[in-house]
Image: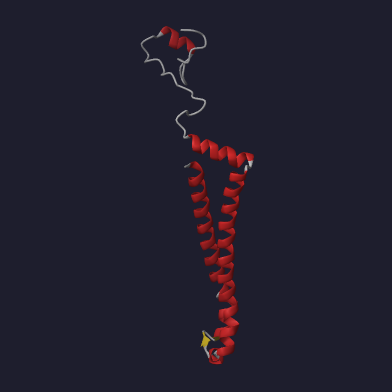
Amino acid sequence: MSKHSAGSGPGRSSKDSQDNGAAGPPPRRKRVVLADSRAPVTVLRTVVELEEQTSYGEELVRGFIRIQFRTAVRLALLAAVLLCGLPVLFFFVPSISDVTVAGVRLPWLLLGVAPFPVLFGIGYWYNVLAERHERDFVDMVEK
C-alpha cells in the first residue's frame, strides 16, 4: 500500500494496516460527481433566467410577488373588517353594552381581548399561505 492510501481509518494506524493485510476489506472507492448530467435542462434554464433577471425570470418573480401581495391585502382587509366591525356592531346593537361577563362589560372584552387571538390567527394563516406560495414557486421553477 502506498503512503497516501485511504486504508487507514479511525483507530488504525498506517503501520497496522500495512502489517495486517487480512484486517478487513479495503474501503470502497467513492465516486465524486461534479454535476448531475441527468438534471432536466428546463430547470437549469429557468434558474439561469431567474439569476440573470431576464424578462421571463422577472415575470416569474413579479407573479410570485403579486400572489404574496394579494394574499397580504386580502387578510389585512379581513382583519380590518373584523376589528372595525366591532364599533359598528356596538352602534347598531346598543343592548350589547349591558351584557357582562365575569363582571366586565362585553364591549371592553371584545375590544380589549378579542383582537389579539384574531390577529394571531390571521398572522398564522398568512404565514401558512405564504409558505405554500413559496413551495409552489420553487416547484414550478424546478419543473
